[in-house]
Length: 454
Image (cartoon, rainbow, N blue to C red):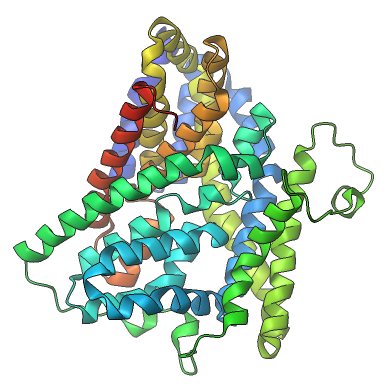
């Protein structure tokens, strides 16, 4: 590692310090990128990465349309009906509230994709429910956070993380979501849920429950006057429409055929990645149409809500991916990626732990699991191919590590939302979910290193 690498390590340490002190993550990452690139003598690499990522439809289309769909679900109350349907059995088994709420968040995050939207969706339902059962607000907030962000979105073919793996390996996102991710995701869910459940019992016994309640002005608009109290099964199924379409149109089912000219026009698409990216956007648009049909009285504002959600996605998600991508380009220019690759080649047994914990650390710093996957998977792909390891398996582990890092990041949007909904400190929530998530990742890494096929 040369001069540029040493400078990069120093700048990374300074960046972490600034983020912990509350500086805007995007400002810190962009400034750090320019400093590292200057030391490496390759500022154009950062500028090019900024411009390319800013307009890359591989991120913009899936993320912005998914956020737009989430806003429409909230506007039409379709998300709330799904949550009410899932939460209904929990009202009679209060001792299962903690794992139950985590499971509900996990299930809702699969079709909704956005962790923040998932938290907004389930929070107003589960917070009063757990509060009435006597749980303290920090425990409720951490429970909400773990469920909404543990990795449910990785089972949706529309997840942008899967697009990053598909781009390098050519494996369709439907296959990734159906075969490669479930063993890892469910192992992480079960281990982290059990550890969190045990810890929550200790938290509640060691301290009296605080008397906070959720302020009315922090609840989403759907919780106001006229919020639904019954369960409309048709509306509850609307969030699943894009998910069903993506699975039915992808391999191996291919029961639904979408004409290529609908999404491609006359654009060439030799790899098929452009089609799959735009198909995600189309699926979200069909979901919006289904929500409008299920809620005709609110359909007049659905298009407006869709674009407001798309704008939120660009502002709060795409911006992080852009600046984190610049940071990754600077790190690569400084030679740290090559150093990592050389380390793995010399000690192949380090591939599994590094593929899990390096992305986790990066996501914890940046607050974005998508950015971590997009940037760092490239660092691990070449060493995996060189060592004749399955790059898809490595990519799945990178994605899961990134999801864990995002969930324990006090600057992640979902952490801030859960803190807002429960009136707690984001650092408190991040600390409470850190150990359960680490336990899950450690179990997965150990199993993989022992040869267990995950």
